[in-house]
Length: 58
Image (tube, rainbow, N blue to C red; front, side):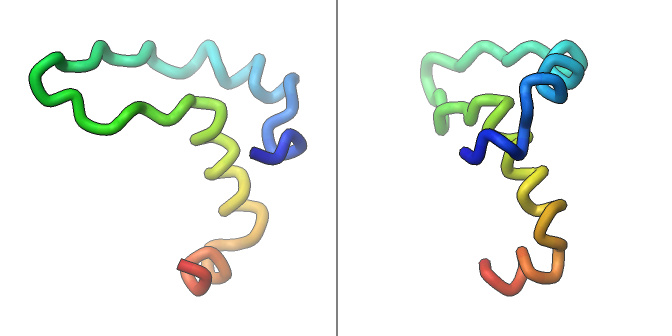
């Protein structure tokens, strides 16, 4: 994760707005959850490069 995509000031403003993580099921837990800050960094990355470029690299 690039640190400049989600600076501390932005994270301090966004983190309280996010819902709490749900509890994992025991029988079929599925994939591990990606940390919220990493998910936000991914969104910020796509917004910074533009959606057309993001789709062409997939």
